[in-house]
Structures are given as C-alpha cells and as structure tokens.
Image 1: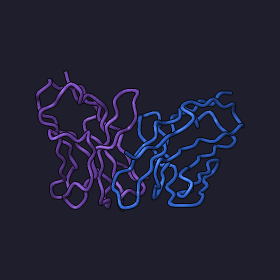
Image 2: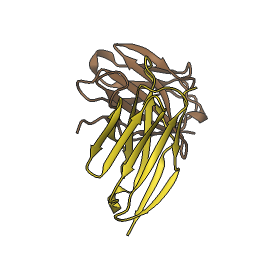
Image 3: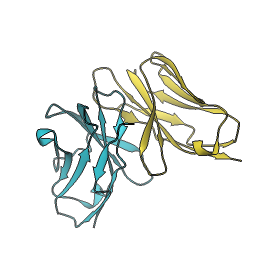
Image 4: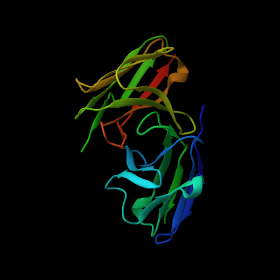
Amino acid sequence: GPKVLQIPSHQIIDMGQMVTLNCDPVSNHLYFYWYKQILGQQMEFLVNFYNGKVMEKSKLFKDQFSVERPDGSYFTLKIQPTALEDSAVYFCASSLLSAETLYFGSGTRLTVL
Amino acid sequence: GDQVEQSPSALSLHEGTGSALRCNFTTTMRAVQWFRKNSRGSLINLFYLASGTKENGRLKSAFDSKERYSTLHIRDAQLEDSGTYFCAADRTGGYKVVFGSGTRLLVSP
C-alpha cells in the first residue's frame, strides 16, 4: 500500500539545539500531519498542513515548532530550540483529502538530553 | 476538548474466538478510522467510515455518528491479530484527527 517514509528513525540531540524531522508523504497526498507520542501515552495531534498553510494546530504545537514543505519535497517539523519535554516519538501522516484515510510513517524517536 | 474514549485498554482472546473494541465520542464526529500498530511500530489503516458498517475479512467496523460511538469486531481471532488497535475520529469542519488510547490485544493458542 501507500508508504510514508520518515527520516531519521532515531535522533539524539542536546537541549537547546535545533532539530528537523523529515517526512516523505504519499506522492499524491495533499494533507500532512504530525503527531507526538510520549512513551506509554496517547498519540497526540500536533498539526495539520495543507497548501503551504497550517490548517489546525493543538496546544502542543508550541511557538518553537514550525512546519513546511518547500516545493513538494519533504514535509518537515522543525523544533528550535528543543527542550527536554520534546523527547517523544513523532509520527508523520498524509491523506489525500482532509482528515480522510491517514497513512502513517514509522516514526522518528527524538531524544533530547 | 474533543475526547475519544476507547475500551477495553487490554483484551485477551483464544484463537478462534472473537470480541469487540469500542470507541465512544464526547461530541459528534464526522468520521472514524481504525488502525493496528504493526511490529515495526507503524500504524496500518484498517477502516475509514463516515457512516454504517464495513467488513474486511475477519474484521468488521461500525460507526454511528448520532449515537457517538464506533466498534471494531474481530472474529475467529488468529495469533497474528495480536497488537495494539487504535480508533481515531474527526469533527465536521475540523482538520484534527483525534486518537483513542488504544486496545492491546493478545491472542493466545
């Protein structure tokens, strides 16, 4: 079936540094999402992105977070600066239509030291 | 905020038996999706429903927007069905798909 690829699978960085998580969504999809899952906890919605704009974001999507997809390349989540509480697995998803069938990547495990 | 309440949190089945997972919604949802997390940690989409029921093999899902719930029925459970199942739903006019807390299913011989 359609695949969403996330790069890297693991990332370890020092608190205060910048990190960029990359997502290669399904090729013809138009809507892109980031979710955050802290170990043992629920999958939490961060943001929905469409046509170059954030359509909806949650309270977890702090000012230090930003998303973009320049020229149809990777859909990225940038955190600058990182904090200890940003340690989690971040999942990217895409869908053809808004909030319809979501396809997920395998996640990027981010560890902030 | 929108809440998706999923139950049970854990479920044990013997091979060949069946059961149902349920999600209740605290508000009217437009559509629901069901996922299984595979051994690699990826979420595999099982169903997308905006109404009614859908069936795929030994799995069947139902969604009642008015009554604010969705179910996932598993029949003739097999060992490979073990894993964590999630429901997720969105409101009309929203862009946010909210997840339940998951059901950890263990199928034993």
